[in-house]
Length: 65
Image 1 (tube, rainbow, N blue to C red):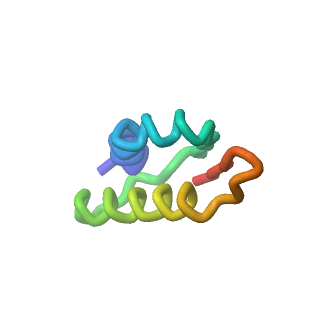
Image 2 (image 1 turned 30 degrees about the vertical axis):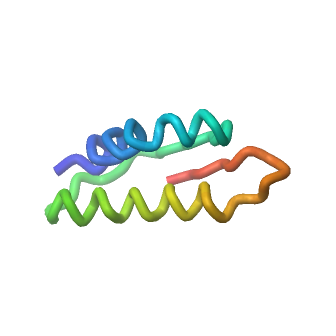
C-alpha cells in the first residue's frame, strides 16, 4: 500500500478546513508499507485533525509529515 496515496485521500477530505485555516501541509516521500489501509487512514486523519485543532490561532498551521 502506498502511504502517499492514503495521505492524498485524507487531504481531500480535509480540503475545506485546510483552506479555511490557510494551513500549509508538507509531505516528504513516504514509504510503502504492509498494513491495513483503514488504520493508516485513521492515523493520518488524527494527525491532521489534531494539528489543525490545536494550532495557534495567530498564525496559519504548518504540518509536516
